[in-house]
Image (cartoon, rainbow, N blue to C red; front, side, top):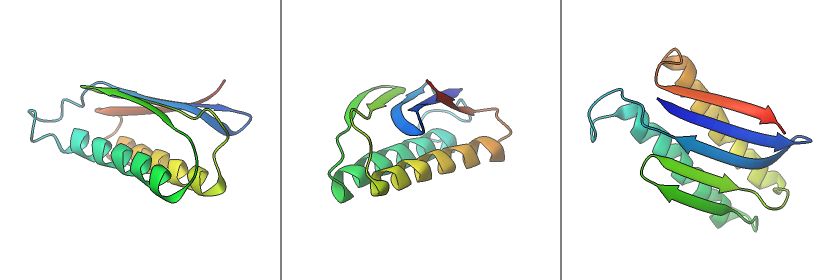
Length: 106
């Protein structure tokens, strides 16, 4: 199962963490893992390309952590909102079996 935790403070993004593997299919054929990875990579690349926002990204096999040291710009917020929306849609489409997304106010 992939576990995603999004932390916000006063409505502003603070951090994003994704851990685990979906287990939907064998490695290389797992469409859930591929979809989640594509959404996360695209969001990071888009924030870096289209905004001046700062991201602190750490990654390893089955793990990614993104910290937002400063408040995101409106464009940055929209891009991360879109990421969370896409991930939540996958979670709902597969009945919470392979992915859980939690957004928490800290």
